[in-house]
Length: 291
Length: 251
Image (cartoon, rainbow over all chains, first blue to last red; front, side, top):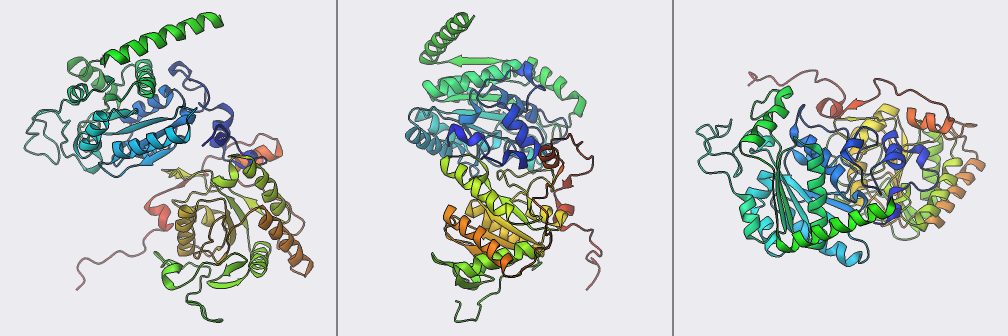
């Protein structure tokens, strides 16, 4: 893994498929792209096999824009809808076994820190509510207790969408699903509260209604994880199939749910707040100096 | 195990049918340094190189599949290796180069003229009617599965030029394939041509494949064809409709 990895060996560029040529010539590497630039550069992910209108895919696309240095990032995921798209991205993707993602990410992050002392490498876990709040719960919690320096992003579609509609810990109480005909029996898990209790440096709850805010939140979470400690983003990414949301209404649903119970929320630990304020000041100073 | 001239399991062009056994489980050993493997039989390295050369010169639509370890400029070594790769390619009239840039599962559709993917390599081989190919610079764990899938579903003669231990599931394989061996391979191609092997596509150079390659190498804009993608999935995997289904009422 070096900066040279994202260039073709001499003579090979002409033989690469078009999308790889575009990635090399006009890709998102070595610079922070903005949401407003979408459509004007080759994105890390374009084609994918997700369902039409999937809000999760939109969110994943925005995550790739928000990541501060794609060329130095490894994404770790697991079974579920999300990995169908994430594994198509032009960023290394490690498929942890169901339940293992945060343990795998711990090993990756520690190994990369030993191997690349002078180059920060970001590890980002991106998996569903089943993979993180249910089956991967123990590994998630312990990575937080251990203060592992990586970001965990939960793609919360509030259902096991990939396997036909079983309720997950993140499903709303009383929700009747195809595979939960008598309704969900328990409250939705308070993962944000658990994260705070476990000492996570930065947590955020977000819906994909405001693309710039999604990209900024991801960038913030990854930068804080790099310097301070674990960070967590819980993102509402509805499953329009299992929740029978008509494709054109997916964003309307996201806006309604955001207004009702999924409003933007962020929490900083004291250390994270100090770090972020100082680094923001520094960034502003540098921007001024550039002008 | 291989004893004398007896081959424990002949690893020959397929199609062998779905899920062929791994050659190693059938008793095919890996070659040592200085040796090669041809159709399940341990031979000298030179014989393996010449066998590979003859296959690439005489079989239809021979293609080189460079993998990430030679395709990307990881370090000075790969940059140097790329030069020798093209030296080999230039000795093979009518050769095609279709890269395997990474191992991302390319779903739902693949452009088989532009890329080969370890998740469904048969699509590229079928579409381009490739009857001999070389895998070079492909990580071993992906090469293994790819070689088995190619043997299962195609009639392609597979050659694995491996930087590590070699591959039993290839029809021809040489281990520890470094720059020196690339040079020896080029020399072997020149030698078999001198010895009278007439290339099937004599007089031709590297043949561009896929609209992006043609556009890039010719320097002229080529429009992307509308129907050049193959659907991956059940129909892609079997490439034909089921002619008869199971009879539920049969006893």
